[in-house]
Image (tube, rainbow over the protein chains, first blue to last red):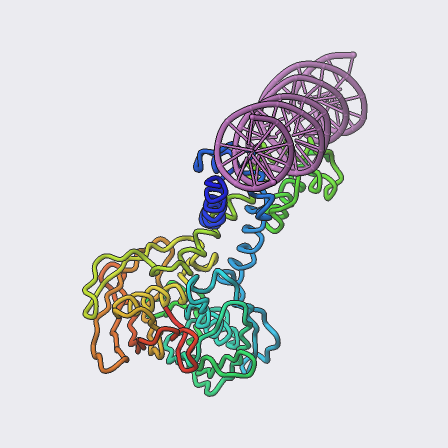
Length: 199
Length: 199
DNA sequence: TTCATCCTAGGACCTGGTCTTAGTAACTCG
DNA sequence: CGAGTTACTAAGACCAGGTCCTAGGATGAA
């Protein structure tokens, strides 16, 4: 039963390969493993791996949302409610891609990004940047968990707003932060010398 | 020449629609505009809009790369050099997706992610988390610019390491930060109660 | 009327698949 | 030894969503 071992190994590697390079066609995969296209198809069938075009589409759809969330004009996570200039909250459902594959711990910058974008969203001004932040990661967040983020304006003087943010996972505080957000009124403020990059 | 107007309008709307909903097939698009599939194909030809599967793939690839850059297992940016436990530097070439489409200003969490991941990389321990950070965004970074990030261990006592990080764009300081990184020696540390999520 | 523009229609062909049927090599067991 | 199982391959019909090309009808302007 040497074959069976080979098959198992190949299928394990196939899963990994497809995860790492989702855009390979069956033909390319077959080349990689030195088997026929049909064998790859059977493997995919057994392993419930969808065809390349569907993998691509799924990726695109997921990432399209993610992209929009991560670098779109809106905020990271889903806005739950907001009182401009006062407070707000958002929810971020963490996914596999956000964490370490080994530990399944969500990478800090995603938590940061949610908090930061919410802080920025509270400030009612056309051009807003984070100038400073003091942040504290309290507990790890695991892939699949949802992060509930609450932000509250603590102080607003001139064009500087201080926002207190805390994030929780099922009631437990996982992150706290103090963000100092700068609002800029001038037209071409974004190109200004002293502006600070954030959103 | 009512047609010509209609055509122009339709094509304008087509561009927008395809941008907003890139997963529509020609048939679905044809339905939307009440024209034949062939007309849509001609429009796509004239407007150099690729077919749906290619749009999907391009989207997936772009976003996949972005995801990898943001949540890959290694560090954000390219590691230039490192002396474990002492200092290190990395370079991040910023891309269109990292910034606001309007202002072309790179979103802060990318800058943060580069700095943070470099700080974490300096600590020579199997499981490392950022516990605290105090950060300061000094100047905006624009899409296309490369961020040169330098990190230096300032203090290491017990399992806590303080790392000073500063990022520059063509010599100008755009970001400074102080990261407090916690190293954990226990085997199943990642699941520990008091661990802090980061990498 | 004549002509150009716009739209549509149809067919051959392509990629990257699906699903099904069938055949072969190799190893295992009674 | 032969029979059966497992792994693999091969071939063919079919499909979606296209490309590329030829051709023809409608419609409005000269």
